Image 1 (cartoon, rainbow, N blue to C red):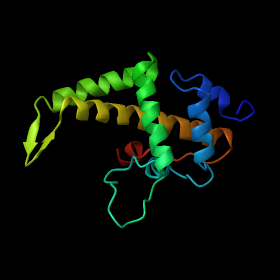
Image 2 (cartoon, helix red, strand yellow):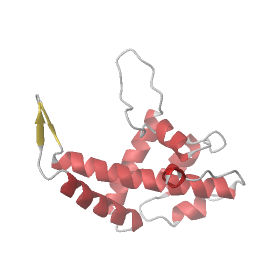
Image 3 (cartoon, one colour):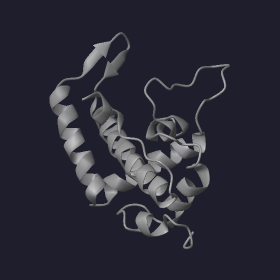
Image 4 (cartoon, rainbow, N blue to C red):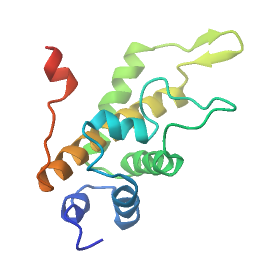
Length: 150
């Protein structure tokens, strides 16, 4: 791990330690991930990805669990991604001020808002991680989608 090109970068991120770093570096193939959305999809963080009985998963469950752990780590550690979590949580609390009953389900609970804010922080972290790794490997880094459509 200490000899990997991304170790110093990962070590500088508050909340990411050797175990989470090793999990990311061993699971993601940066050569195949031409866009950050490829990483998000492989991690099970793309919109609409859900388990369907009888269908093969199109993501890596180990990487998805690693991303969940990263999100929890960001919440517990006061770093730059904790700030993203906090601002995202405030945004979602304003956007969804009340819980919504939809049949038997209740949407936008405190737990839902926590999970949405955590997911946003993890996805932003993955985009920074992806771009830094691609640059260090001398691979092309595509412009973010949001920048291309404006």
